[in-house]
Amino acid sequence: MNPNVQTIGKDATVQSAAKLMSDFSIGCLIVTTDSRVVGIITERDIMRNVVSQAKDAAETKVDDVMSDEVILAEPEMTVDEAADLMMDKKIKKLPVVKDNQLIGIVTVTDICMASPKIIEQLGEMLLLPKKGGEKVVAG
Image 1 (tube, rainbow, N blue to C red):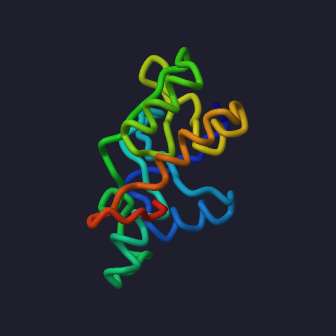
Image 2: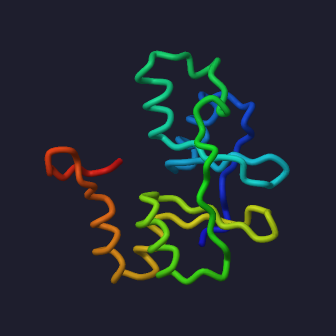
């Protein structure tokens, strides 16, 4: 788990979110209110919901783009349990909460560094079946 989680408020602009992601070389921000997780905004959310629709990132709020159904981990989870949860839910980022407070984040990269044996399992998750039986790399 990485305890240094970058967060943003839901009333911030998508442009601010993109700048934070760029500044910290990260692919997501956890959206919080009073240290409670209320959402997650990813590079993919920005591409799908702002850039591809030619919306103004300086005017669009994080709340309009973020996913508000966030899968959470508990600090007591094992690496295997976190990897299984990520694979089952097809997610790559897992905020960690304790007593409803954000305390860290686990990413696919974190898991691969902690347990190289899981790389094969996560590789399967990243090659999601596409209609027609083709495989496509998820982004």
